[in-house]
Length: 322
Image (cartoon, rainbow, N blue to C red; front, side):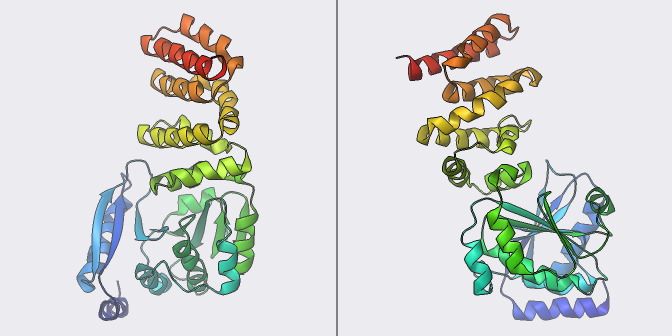
C-alpha cells in the first residue's frame, strides 16, 4: 500500500459513517494477504469495521461489501477508489432512470463477474456502472475479480483483456459497456439458463419464496435447481427442499416436473441424498413412478432408503388415489 493510497483511505474515513465489510477466508493461501489488507484498511479508516468469516464451500477468499458485491483480490491501484465508493454504497444508489426501469422488471437472478486489474484505467468506470445495479436489487450479484491476482479464474473464463464483464456463461462484454444494454439482456434471459451459483446465492439471501414464484410463473423447473435439490451440502439441499415445498403447495403441476429429472439421477446418489430425494418425489411425483419406487423399496440395502421409498409411495397415493 503506497502513501498515496493510505492518504486516500484516511480521507475516506473522514467522509463516511461506520460501515461493515466481511472478509471470507478459505484454504487458499491468498486468504492471509486479503485479511492483512482488510486489517490495514480498518487501521487507517476505523469507521470500516471488518468481520472475519470462514467460507467452507468456496475455493477462493473474497471481501463482501454488501448489496450483492464481492471482491476477489486486493483492491489497490486503480481499483481502490471504486472499492471505497462501494463500501459506503447504499441500496438507494443512484442509477439512471432508463437503467432502473429495466432492473425493476428483472424476473431471474443475475450473477455477474467483472474482471479488472490494478493498472487498468478503464476498469473503474465499469465498476462504477455495475456496482449500483447490484445495490439496487437483491436479484443481482456482482463479483469483481482481479484477473492478475486470480489468474486461474481468468484463464478458466478465457479472459484476454480487462475490463471484461460476464453474465452467467452466456453473455460477455469487453471494454466499455452500455449499462442499459446489459440491463436489457439481464431482463430478457430465459430462466432455464440460470446457474447453480445464482440460485444458491438467492438461497443464501433467504429468497425462498422468490425462487418458487419464478418457477411457478414460468411453469418450469430450472435445470440448475435439480442440482440444488441433490447438493452434497445439506444446508443447501434443505433450502432447496423448502422451495420445493412451496412449489408443491402452490402448483402441483409445476412440482411434478421435477420428478423425472430427479429420478433419472437417483441411481448416482448416496443413501443420504436418496432419502431426501424420495421425500421430494413423494410430494411431487405422480402415480407413474409408483412402480419404480416399489422396485427401489424392495431392492435397496438401506433400511432408511427403503422406509423413505414406502413413505413417498404413501404420499403419492394419498394425493392421487384417495
